[in-house]
Image (cartoon, rainbow, N blue to C red; front, side, top):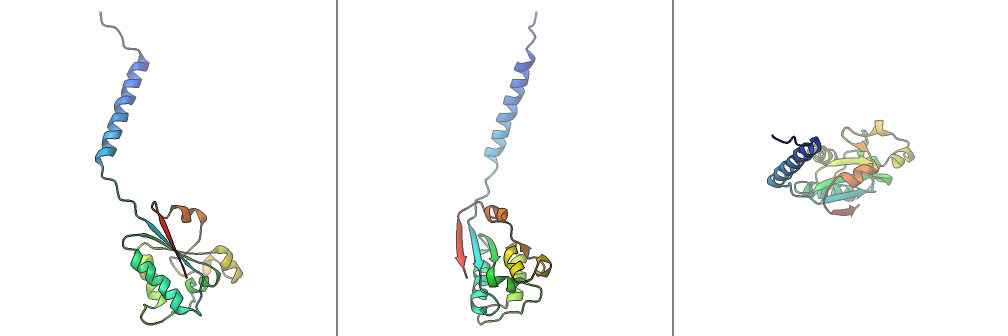
Length: 151
């Protein structure tokens, strides 16, 4: 006469098989390489086109193989407003074209909410694609090491 297997043993066996299967699937899947991140901090405003455009150029250079976030605060929030002047300084691309290209390539562009308020502005005054900074985004925009550049 065949003995009946206790239910807990059957459940434990199924869980074990699923765990092994999960491990095999994860081991077979190639890991996506971890990319390092670049946090570019822009405090200069429209009266400093060289510094601002250099920051945008560095973001452009880094973006193909790094996770990049551009953070505008202090006077820098002036640069990412809807009515911001189009900054120019040779040999760099102008600010409007550079920001549009960066955001189109997945670069996060954000502005400090406190600095916006200090300038008498709000999120509604930001150019399309620019967001209000969120501290959680600072800690989640990359999984690798972080290099910070200040302008």
